[in-house]
Amino acid sequence: MEIEQDMNIDSTEIANYVYLFLKENNFLQYWSSFDRKGYDDMKQLLEMTPDELEQALAQDIGIKKIGHLKRLKALLAIHSTRGNSNEKEYENKDAKKSSNKTQK
Image (cartoon, rainbow, N blue to C red; front, side, top):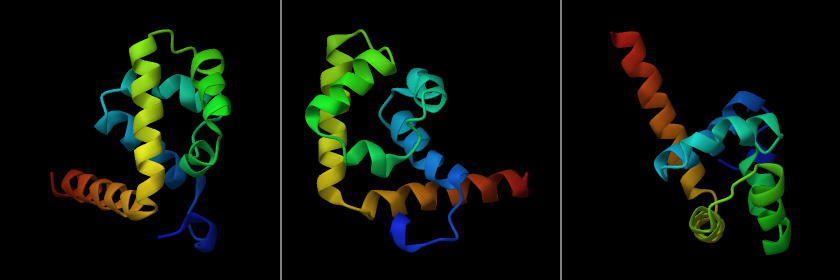
């Protein structure tokens, strides 16, 4: 699913991609900062230049650990080369999580 082509996607679903990306890569402790500072759109993150991304992660979000900065930048670079396949993967995981909640 391409975000820019599907107008039925609301901002919560878009933010879920960033949330799930952080959760899956053990960076969930940064989610509130990403969300509060407006970095809740995966497309926005993937379109940033390396310098913009480093500034966003270090200064805006406040990630101080160099290892976390390097790893997040590398993971986002990998994610951008995979295109939208990861968005589908996150969407499927989110749908499974929702269906599990309704079954309980």
